[in-house]
Amino acid sequence: MENATKALLISAAVLIAIVLIAVSIKILSSTQGVSEEVGSVTDATGKAIFNSQFTDYEGTQTGTEVRALLNKVVATWNSSSTRHIQVNDCTSANAIATYRATIANTSIYTVSVEYDSEGYVNKININ
Image 1 (tube, rainbow, N blue to C red):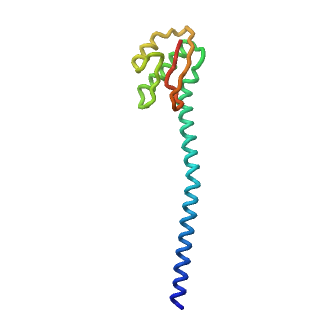
Image 2 (cartoon, one colour):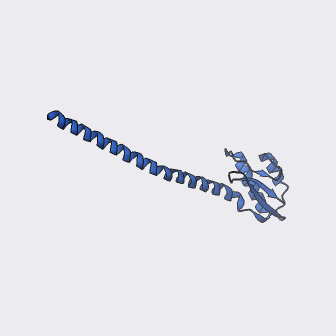
Image 3 (cartoon, one colour):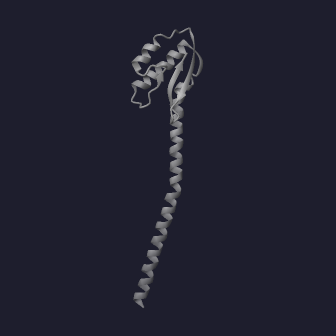
């Protein structure tokens, strides 16, 4: 009789442990979707912040504003960022800095941006 009681207690403890493990797995799997959602929101926010540095200059701009835009592009090239932005046909920080020197402060320019497949600004056209 004593062995039967111990066996019942052991089986009840094992059953409780299995239920606790199942509940823990259920909780973890339900929070995984939340984690993925937070990650996608973080990515979207980072993309929006990066792009806004350059998209704020879209449209008709004075030479002074275009030079400020080009300063930001050169800074991006010189930072540790892996995202580099091409300006017209300029594909290096030095080429963009040289092009910036040709921009007249009082002239009017039209600025447009292009995006890569991930949605990041990767080219700026200045006319």
